Image 1: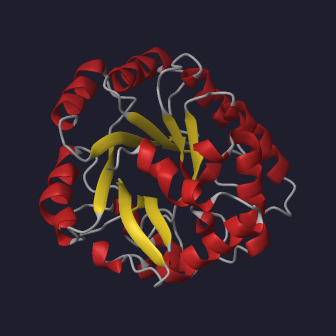
Image 2 (image 1 turned 60 degrees about the horizontal axis):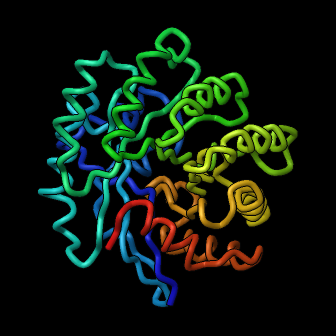
Length: 292
């Protein structure tokens, strides 16, 4: 029996959340986006008979970014009680570029929620990291003092972006950070795979930096076993087995395959390259996200 804690899922309630990115007129302009533009709840997390889903981590996905506390209220009062046999933790949203008073107000309003263990931010070319570096570092220092994680998504083939991010994080050695979707690695047969790996190497020097291997469908709907194995192999070479986790990105996994099939594939790939399954499927996430 393979015990799984899935550290990256998204629950949607279209009647209560905003989810502007799911609307067909908004980016990303994926032709298959309608497949995930629907309510998604814990009962959708179905695995095979030889797997046991012990827990999952909901990661914010645009429920209400102006009032992010509303997402935590919804999750803890309406979503998590639907699956009392499953443990849940939450990665919420907070604007790390906000002014100090706004950031502190939002943080104070959320940090007491029992399932909250950190926040996610998506870095892109429009993030004002150079103009607001001191402000961002001050906000991230508050996260560190509160014992909360910073999760982030970024394209690790963008060297300028990744170096700007790491210039922030090198100054905050006590902050635990988690790279989402393994830094969006390009296909392993592309010329930029080596660039992705070199930029990941910069973050491997941070002892409190962890990686979630997930979101393979974000870069190609037709990703292969060889690609997954290449990403897992590169990640363990750089970060070791203790700082990597396999996650799903559900329901976006359904853009390529079912949740059931996804975990079958991940387990097969992890076995193929000789990873210690209990670590990368269960205990690393259990320890990082505070599961019992």
